[in-house]
Image (cartoon, rainbow, N blue to C red; front, side, top):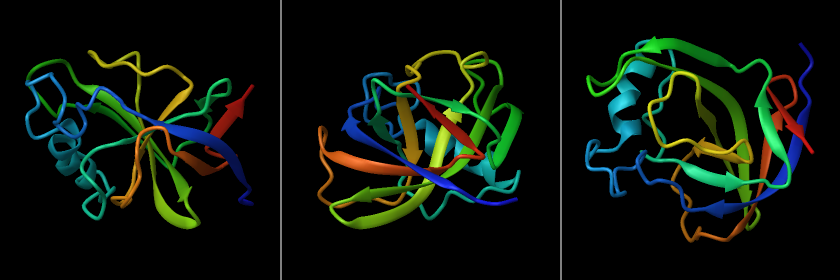
Amino acid sequence: MSEHWQCVGGRVRQGHRVASGTGEDRRYPAGTVRMQRPFFAERGLDLSPFFEGTLNVEIAPRAFALVKPTHTFRQVSWTELHPPEDFSFSRCRVVHRGAEYVGWVYTPHPETKAAHFQPPTMLEIIAPWVEGLNYGDAVDLWAPVEEIAITG
């Protein structure tokens, strides 16, 4: 398969802070990413090199849609607090102040997700910690066109 990457500009926004465990929802004090990570690892995706939270990138007025993610995991039973969920992961690169960070677009499928929904204009990224990155900062997000469609 040929690989073509597309770039979309966005801004870092505060999310629900559930992925990192720093939000007001105390059902996941360690954060959902830390809780989910072992389940993804046993299915072949090792997220241990990355920050245990998500980088939320708003690309409005544009939006994204999954095309053919690198990984899709169905019926992941990662907590007893709600039914199993489906997750997809697509490769990405985040560029901030000239530095590039390789990561994953993390997409809990809305049809199986219990709470904490994101609009289709917000991408959740699992990436290394980005020193000096703040809410409101501009970033460029690169993703393979074969995996993610950017519309608008």
